[in-house]
Length: 110
Image 1 (cartoon, rainbow, N blue to C red):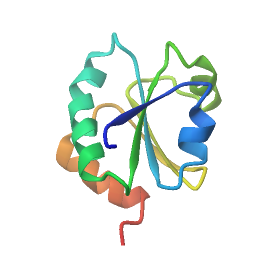
Image 2 (cartoon, rainbow, N blue to C red):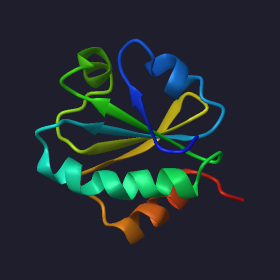
Image 3 (cartoon, one colour):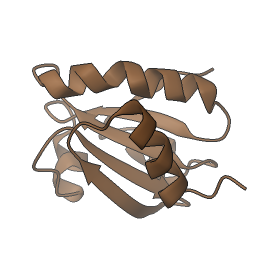
Image 4 (tube, rainbow, N blue to C red):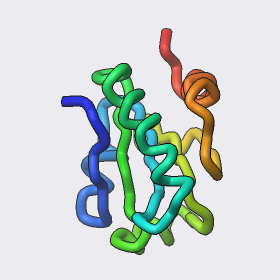
């Protein structure tokens, strides 16, 4: 079941913190133009990396608790979480080719 998983305050712990696979959390908003441009890239990667990496989408306007907890002040912000811990973050839109190298930097794909 590839694709972006919609995450909010209620299911963040289950979908991200307790995930058996690494998670890329995309903090986004409907009104954010750079976020809309990057979404197809994340959707494509979520299908290609199905079972190895989960891609989660958090709308900052609808998930204020998680947004505040992680100190998200700019969007898009990508949080890289593995085994319940933040391994890194990237702020601002990312080119498709660059996103794969960022994934390798934060997650072990041996």
